[in-house]
Length: 237
Image (cartoon, rainbow, N blue to C red; front, side, top):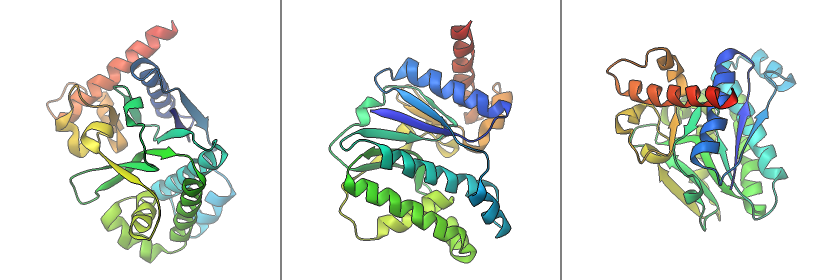
């Protein structure tokens, strides 16, 4: 299995996130090499969507879908890949996710049940078609603010909203759900962080990295992330 993540910025935080993700994958999941792709921070599609009143998180998520689709379309048939957000750290072997299914995603026990921060794909003609459709729906939603607003109440982000639509449509994929508490630990589950956690996901809690000594559950995750950053810096010296 190959891991893929997209780098959408050049500021210091993006650089730190990319370094820790790459180092943590190499250290804790050596059998799953990672490629971090440098995506442009802007392009004509962004400019046009901004003119229609779309900004920030929706634009970045639309771009993520665009580049994930390109990665899947360019992958070899039969290849198993994992698409990850940049603001993650790998804590354990991810090769255990490989299996006899087409698409895997993580689920949480909260209202926004799906989180698409990590997606597993067995590349085939049908998963290539699925990703093409996913990309298409995301860009349709960028042009339908009313529908997107309603969907985000259920799914949170635009990428997840499009996935939610697709999961309700007829399809011929074999799907697999992974518990987010283990495979994609987002802030709502930070109090579940333990030795079984495979991936931590900082989301908008990257600011917690400057406050790793608190008593909140996020402090433990921040300490783990910062320890990996320190190790990665030492490894480069």
